[in-house]
Length: 191
Image (cartoon, rainbow, N blue to C red; front, side, top):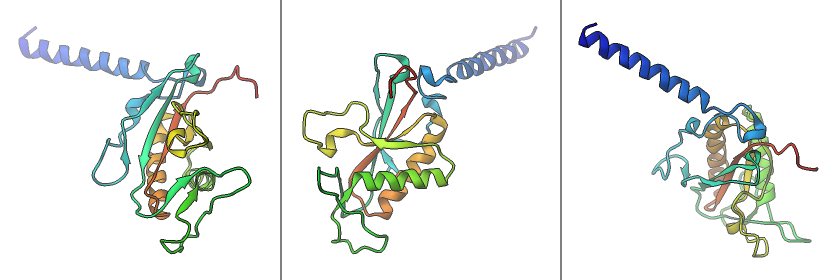
């Protein structure tokens, strides 16, 4: 075998091995964590245009199914902050044509419901929003420490979900951040 043929054979074998490694790293069992692989996320970190996301925060739980990754998406709006509803009080949720000074603090819960609806309209499969992994619960519902998120179970939906979050934050002129958490299902958990 000549050197050119040997080089081609080596590249073919390496390509097959790399293909096998990629296929074998794709999770197919929600009890072992989120479906797919983090390599399916292609949204760039700290971009200057489009969605702005930070380096994802990985959090390992007691079992593989509770492994989760939190992805913070920064709003590109200018006026509104996201806050948690306080007991007995509901924060406002502005209409689409609300003036910039109207409703300076927007309801995390209301915004989360809007995101769920929008994602489902786009064919994604989110679950109800809530407190994300790595949250600091030592303060009284301080939004900035809760890693508030919409939850997904499949890495293949993450880029589309990031785009939806960015779109909604911009639409509501939110200058704050909101997250996506990618996780598995803990089937042993009592509901």
